[in-house]
Image (tube, rainbow, N blue to C red; front, side):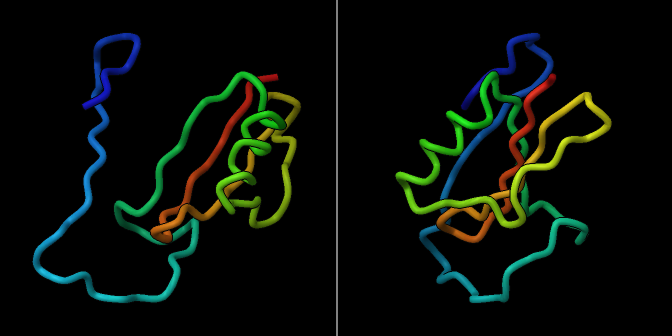
Length: 88
């Protein structure tokens, strides 16, 4: 269990061992449901270098959102969407 710095939230990562997983197609960023997670990073380029070492690459490159954030989506090993955001 990870605690957020402000103490108002927690993040728990787990993997189901039973029952067997049901295979589904990849989810899209705009689909409803709990299938994505976002992380704030200090250096998005460095974070992408680390992700690439684990076989994860941006789905559509890195976007500049209104000169406020640099954003990108990656697909994790289990198919979950991971958004990285760097405040500019």
